[in-house]
Image 1: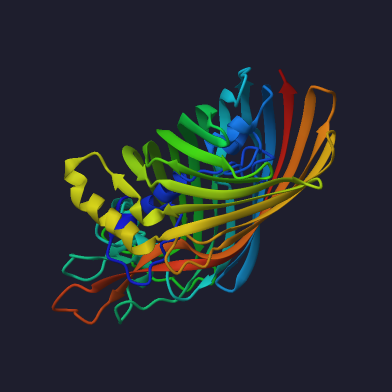
Image 2: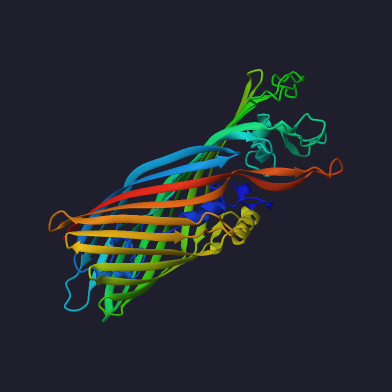
Length: 502
């Protein structure tokens, strides 16, 4: 797995879901997306929902009534992808718990003091890519042939690769073997899909108090916990029967008698992770209607345990099949960078309230520790890769609400999340809307819909492109490239929460 992220690259796209660098910058991301109020109205400087302790724990001291709440969300993503000139649509959806917790407001003569605990959803990983097309440039077997590739051994055993020349000191794609010229390729039909799923959340304790008149402080400590699943199904078919030579000896009699008809790969990665996260914040009431606030989330060390397996099957023109697989487990640590949040809140001007927040994260400061001295070279290369391909970002969020009465309110919000990749094209826009209803004097229902849209060019697979000019005196020069898909993504999240006053 390490090979995929640390090799010297040439026109390789860092936006590849299976790279360690991608997952390291993804697993630690935080937001108040588990709460239907805070996801619209940031709580950095505003009295918002239960999940706003993630924005700024000091803002929780603005609550003067105790409550308990729980909520569910339904998540759906639809992706329209363009790969090799053909368009496909994929989708992934699930439903689950997105928040549960309580806040207790102590009776005080002056100021306020609150404590609370609970779970808040931080990040969902649902993605769905479907693709099919004829590739005249590369084959996924070009990903198998590089020295150090996790696929190298099983690819050679299943005839997905073979020796590149008579010296037998470098591997070549089976679709480039047997021609008069090195590297000749007749093209191949490719199809398959990549799905990602999982969720991360935070189990936290928090407190907040009015430390001095109009000055509020707060802190939270918690455990982030989550899971991430990646599944890639990839098939290559010689539909036009262009590869019909006799270069493969499938019965081990010393004579070649067949060629490749179809190559199939099933690759799965299951990761679970957890880590401690702490944050602190300040909020100052400039006036009865205007607040300013700021919070700081400490760098987070995340422990990751992954199970990885891949099965490779090669079927020949004569019907014979060769199959091999890899099963492995690996543990490592991620150090996710700190997060700085600043915000402004305006409350109840003729029924209207507004909240704005900006969150700063420098993803280039993400580091990975492979926890093995023998992997120090790979670890250093992986961290260099992060430095070279990721950058700092400011995520912007704003929301407005209008209270028609104590029993009914409407909310709307928008956000902008720039790409964490250097020169990335996957900037995201977020639009949200919701409403709150008093069902009884002590029970309130909050509903919200969040729509996120973006477009990106991401890697379907990374592969080796040889420069054959040094042959026959030396081995070919290795360059790494990416076979990319253009993906237009529409992501919806529907949330509902019941709050019970205590």
